[in-house]
Length: 297
Image (cartoon, rainbow, N blue to C red; front, side, top):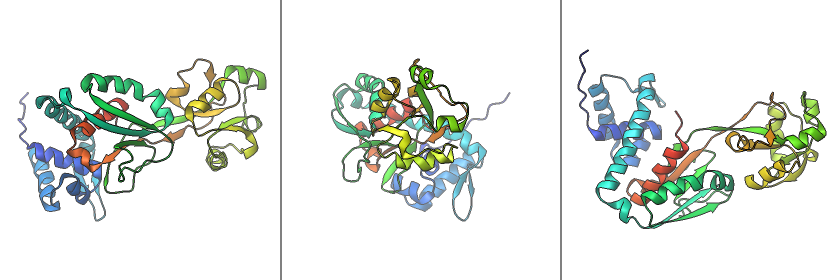
């Protein structure tokens, strides 16, 4: 088999990666500090070098082709590796100091961040990490946090966002609770049971109705804005709760009380100010979070 040697400029690869992640040439050009014609030429140059079409160009948007989608993850890996090489080559990870604030829900902070922070400590032991564990959305533009993990894509074009691996929310209840009240086999059965709700249970009614359950506020004997508190209430047999699948499944005393319930899709986005392009300590933390939490395929 004859192998074709590929020659392309890393700047072209960065142009493609930024365009794919930002969704448009104009947004990608702003992110990289380039003019739009320059960025467009770099993307076209990469397509010519590879002999493929990466984007379908329509009047309204750029859409990744099947080939572009397949290559995107490879270029993302190259970009993250390039950042790590840059940091290591300059000795920045060893000597990196300063403060980085990460805003996320208390569930994310409790169940996922500790393991990530262990890896971060090994890479940059002198960094000072502040964890803002709150369901309130921190304002990155006002520097209330450097990095945020959110469940919706930000609309502010001044922010850089990378979509993480999605997860799903499922019904969970303790086996003790279900032994006492019976395991429902029909929506009418589950509609008679107690639920552990979010901070404002009335906001859940429409969502639950769209998934086939006609609940009322009276079903929610307990409510809390804290995922960790909701988990403990469910574990103690105080009702049924909706928990991320990888959280609820970690506790053997919990089970799905109604397998016919359609899981709730939960998006996750890693968000930072565009300054992360030039701020090595924020970029290091951002890339590690993206690597550990996974990006959407």
